Image 1 (spheres, rainbow, N blue to C red):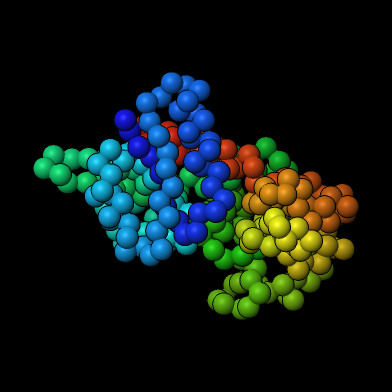
Image 2 (image 1 turned 30 degrees about the vertical axis):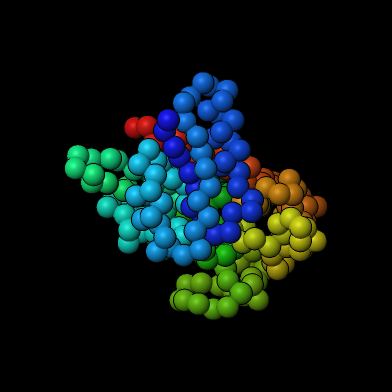
Length: 248
């Protein structure tokens, strides 16, 4: 039986284990998907060595960047992003293992947001600076959209803080993507600190969160007439992409 799995810590909320095991059952695939909750990234190679039938892994917080030094190579898009969420495990002769890193977040995000984009959507604000935000940045770049990261503190040149989101910037950057956990269940009464009164019907607000289904970020955008979308479709599309990566 082939095995697939997820590494991260902690793994309280795992979409992947339910999704893939249901897929295996409904499609008659002789495989299982398990969670590998590892307290430190140095435990990663033990997972590979102790599970000889392991063919692929998903990677979640906090290891999307930390896992890279352990890999044999990276897909070109993934190398630009600098964050991995899918690993293809290739078993070679004499017990050698080749580990190839991919990023299916960029695939899922791009496919999900593209149908919503209009000609006036030329620039984007990316809220947050974690691994997912990097995939979003490169996904938007591939779609011809220029992006700027927004952080609570000024971390680098070309990055904005929430306090710097002026009327001019809000009018110019009409795509806003929330890549932070702010507003996720159970803290549903919170939202990123952007000036929602400056959001217009020209804006598109995309939240990578999907629990709750409609976040406060989305509600406030919708109240201003903006188009809004959550991250559930992206989650499904990146899972489809992961399965294709493992089998190509």
